[in-house]
Length: 298
Image (cartoon, rainbow, N blue to C red; front, side):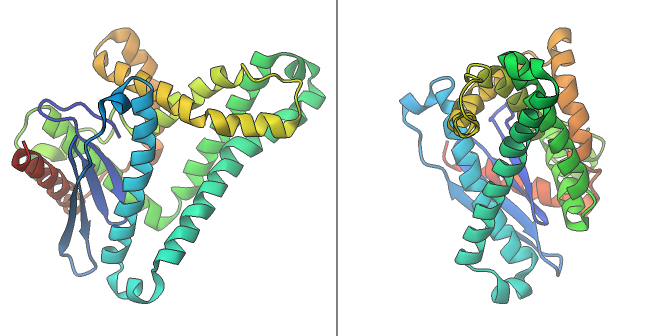
């Protein structure tokens, strides 16, 4: 999630029994173990060269940074949340395999499957295969439905439902921070678990931008060419979507912009749950720690 707070730009991510928070120069993870104790991991981020902060390019860098930090945060959270089991089952190799399988699954589900479904649809409706915009619009619609089905299904998984609760806790504490409230459970509890700059909203923007970007790919080429072209365009789409997300953040109070970000808020109802006080405490611990680090390195 990308946010622009009143003091520092702060974003976060829900992990296994915990929350990761990222500020411009630092990141922290707070995780509660099976005995009820909260563990913290904190690191200083490397300073980015000015060139990598240019529009669009900064979004591409942010994507890869988010993936890198997300892997580290999940690795730490798994080792602390399931410490007893982790000693026997977790390892660098198993984590690497899990990440590789996850990437292949994402490519298969959200790029290959909708593209193939669109190809089959073009045999039934000839207009789809002849019109580039219509082809990619159909591809985008399939992608959205597959994504919604995926989120609904994983939401039935008990462990994922808890992660969605931590996702809601993450949003609540950032809302409180951005409003300038004292960071206490009482001040955090009544905030919304939805946030306009959530990563879920970012994914929705990515899907819309991809429809336009993929429209420039010639439809006459072979299926493999279309598939590989979509893979190559992912960084550019991410960069453009990042800029649109920042724009929606800047103009979030504008009525027209609010209508545009409303679908993303609706989608978040599938990826967030109302957290309990223990989860709010974990999210607060992560946020307070990253803000403390920012003050120390100011």
